Amino acid sequence: MTLPVVPIHDPVANPVTGSDLPAGEVAGLEAEIRALAKEKDAVILAHNYQLPEVQNVADHVGDSLQLAIVGQKVPQSTIVFCGVHFMAESAKVLAPDKRVLLPNLSAGCSLADSITAESLEDWKARYPGHAVVTYVNSTAEVKALSDICCTSANAASVVRSLPQQKILFTPDRNLGRWVAAKVPEKEVVVYDGCCPVHDVLRSANVEKVRASRPEAVVIAHPECRADVIDAADVVCSTTAMISAVERFPSARTFIVATEHGIVHQMKKRWPDREFIVADGCIGCRMHCPYMKMIDLLMIRDALVRGKHEVQVEPDVAAGARRALERMIAVPRDA
Ligand code: SF4
Image (cartoon, rainbow, N blue to C red; front, side, top):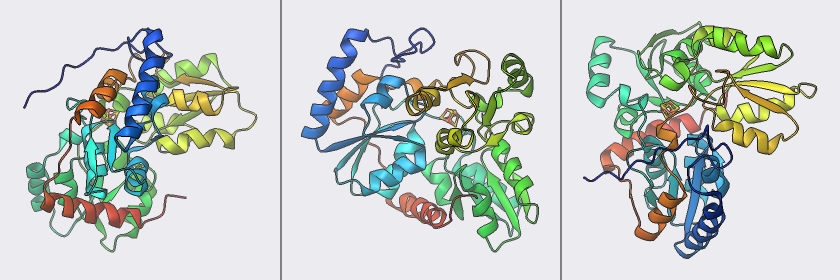
């Protein structure tokens, strides 16, 4: 398999569009992509962490599960998924009759890759009688071997919903520990994977930023470490982070402890508020390289050439679909 060339974009130097494409080219590419999407009967979905120019051209922006569900429901026959590989897989699993394109096949995820089908099988063998709860940031193969999936928006409700007392939670240790604390009536064994983007942050970074804005509200994602979660005013999923702002009508400044791409959506929705990435800069450390591997040129290429089509083996897809559909039936955490 030939992997595409990976662009090295510098969103810190180019905060408006995110990529290194000349500003004059962006508007032309956007128009071209919109016309191609119509011609090819395609919907463009973008994750909250994508480059701003990619979020701007998308039909829908959201978290991975939200987007996979949207992909299932929209009438278009092709989904161009601007995110990472496991997200495109989930979209394919939930919409098997649609063509799902990932504009850059190199867009992986080190959290999803921290557990394989084989290592999950080994882990399960060491803990007989445990139900396996797998975060959606995982491969389809791993989902297929799980009892149920969860997102950061419903992880505690998913664990509570299971009849089993003993749970194996995979792959994110920070989310797993957060859930275990919220559901103390269950025995939760947590796998040792993490998202390096969130795991790098320390409460010392958050406190340093807060020292310059003592009135700011801190919103953190549960993939952050426990010390960061303890320092936060609100802990929630990426989508809930955007709406959490309305719970603080008098707050002007928010410190955001997640990947910096989300600030683009927050600023669009709340232009009169200030959002500061919790690492204290404009995203140098809380920057997911995998989420910045797709630009407008690649989306255009995906539409013109139909690449890169994501496939999931039918038996793997059936198992992953069962785990995802069980999860979708569980409501979000209160
Ligand atoms: S931020 Fe990047 S590395 Fe972390 S879970 Fe998301 S895609 Fe994976």
